[in-house]
Image 1: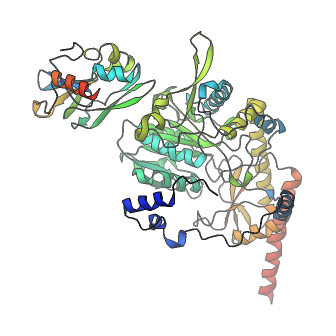
Image 2 (image 1 turned 30 degrees about the vertical axis):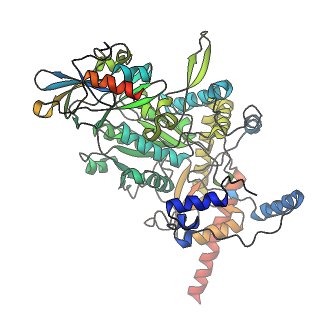
Image 3 (image 1 turned 90 degrees about the vertical axis):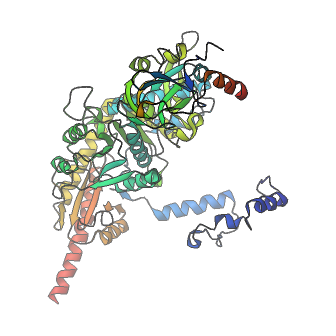
Amino acid sequence: MSEKIPVDLRYTRSHEWVRQLPNGQAEVGITDHAQEALGDLVFVEVPPLDRRLSAGETCAVVESVKAASDVYSPVTGRVIARNEELVQKPELANSEPYGAGWLFRVELDGGALGGPFLTASEYEQFLQEAA
Amino acid sequence: MPFIPHTPDDVAHMLEVIGAGSIDDLFDEIPGALMARPLDAVPPALSEMEVARLLTERAARDGRLLNFVGAGAYEHHIPAPVWAIATRGEFYSAYTPYQAEASQGTLQLIYEYQSMISALTAMEVSNASMYDGASALAESCLMAVRSNRASTSRRILLPRTVNPTYAQVARAITHNQNIDFEIVNYAPSEGRLAPQALGAYAGRDFAALIVQQPNFFGTLEEVDALTDWAHANNVLLVAVVNPIALALLKPPGEWGSGDAGKRGADIVCGEGQPLGVPLASGGPYFGFMSTRMAHVRQMPGRIVGRTLDTQGRPGFTLTLQAREQHIRRSKATSNICTNQGLMVTAATIYMSLMGAAGLERVATASAERTAQLLGVLTQIPGVALAFDTPRFHEAVLTLDRPVGPVLEALAERGIAGGLDLAASYPELEHALLVCATETKLDADIDAYARAMADLMRSSRGARAAIRGA
């Protein structure tokens, strides 16, 4: 298993990752593959606090010098934190996509992640098939 | 013969696949009355000499009226160097080159243009221009809805003092994006918005308020109070301004009474034609648009930025292109991703030649000529000012009779006397919008006043005679 796809996260086919946090919360970001495909990020727009998100809904934008892409919420819930440091330093999503480069945190409806998601191995296989 | 790569067999095959009987069937949703009929009166071809002769004769027949019409397009003097320079081979193109960075001169010109518009409007960033003032307003409405983070509303407050043509274009362009306009009336005695009347809209969640300064009647709106109201209600302020007037008036970036950084319009747009572009029967003109950096990613159109190359030398580049449709496709900020390159070239040269002091002299002279015109016209019995409020270089007169026939009679005397407001503002009885710029001299104004006095007197006399008989 590549270290570029941590095993403790869940993934989407649109290249977001989601991390289950305690107390029915979740953290969302974009994968290493996504940041690599986009190139150097220059701008990140994250959803406002308290916004209600439905799984699959457009909720953020990541922009590099060459492209701008929508980020789709993998989960349903209410936004409880935005990564303000990332807004100031979009390159964090390039250097640490699974750590300091997270986008936002959500209080999950019913406390459950929902899904279906891909596991790390399924996401890796998905990338290989798409390549 | 036109070059059409499809053979009759190709066409027949394609029609069969999609189940259409003929190519004309593809257009059957267009009502028959709107279909262009074949031209049946096209004469046989003429030689270049014959065509030149014909058009010269027709131009002479149209004549050249002494122009007192404004209403969004303004006749200003254009110094000869403006178009002599703009039409040089190095500049003479309507296009931003596709290999943009290879054309450093073009990019530098656009960058200088953006800097001038930003300075004139006191905003942080300008785009490379839009099609015209009306479409720039439509784009500003779309941008305001995207930009207003405090509101999810798609409704916009549209005062009746905004140019009615702009309002029409804004509706047409934004209609399919579900944007609604709520019409705000003006104070009937003042010809401008009453800021206290906006209280009726408070707490109803609007994305933006549009304010035109000077407004369509030429009257100055109370922009500070309007801007403060907008910001107090989480409503973005979209300013529509005349660039020449900005030489004298407070720039939109400074409207309102808040602290620096909090006050000011959020989006500014307008018609750039007064800056060195001839009237030319209505176009091509260009629209301008500027905003604050906080909203720059929602601003449509091209933006040129200054940067350093790999060797540290300054250069110019198209920037923030990820907003545009060649990259962001259907999610782009606009489907209009072009600019009016040649008109912007002329405007940039015009502004450079005039300088701040020159623009101020044009603005001052225009305001003075209008004041002079209003002074003599309102001396004429049957002619009065509709609104006695501060104005720039345009005003509404009310006549004691319908405006249309008066304008026709003036035209017969070689004078374009203004715009009849009957269609757009039926509540203003016999209203005539007039404008004089720095191009109108004492003799011109006297000629207009004499013709008007004559018309008003003669028909009065005729009526009196009829009554007497």
